[in-house]
Length: 60
Ligand SMILES: [Zn+2]
Image 1 (cartoon, helix red, strand yellow):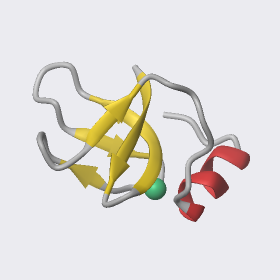
Image 2 (image 1 turned 90 degrees about the vertical axis):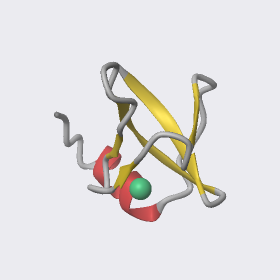
Image 3 (image 1 turned 45 degrees about the vertical axis):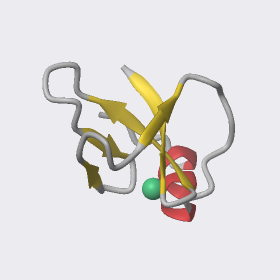
Image 4 (image 1 turned 60 degrees about the horizontal axis):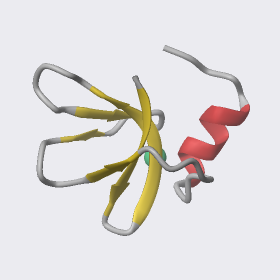
């Protein structure tokens, strides 16, 4: 399920695996459980790579 991932104060857009809590961001980064916060509140990502990926309509 798509969600926003906050890591190091940077908001990425991506999804979190429901079986191992590994977060995958649109910009191709991986975040392990407890290294990020996820939020269901909608907002703009502050990661430029995620913004670019979102704008290009890339989906997985
Ligand atoms: Zn990102």
